[in-house]
Length: 136
Image: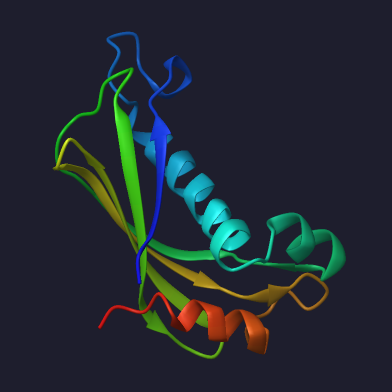
């Protein structure tokens, strides 16, 4: 299964020439991951942080910028799980506009409790939901 969400490129994402400023892709992808957690996994970041005193630290990010995106573009973001382990998940994300890949990233995320600040096992119900998005 693939999680998909669309986002409009806004002025806040762009440099003065109207092109998405490279670091803004990181912000957009984190928004998409937050959307995936809340909309598909039924586990909001507010629940994660405030109720469960946990977090999902980024451990490694590999990005490729294929083509520029411009203000007003509608980007379709896709998420799939490349690899799922007891305490980490490697997520594959793409930003596509009009069938053209604009940016892709692999995010290695961990699960951590805020009191220990070390990796912990994913909650079992969350892990089961994440497995549905694993690449075949």
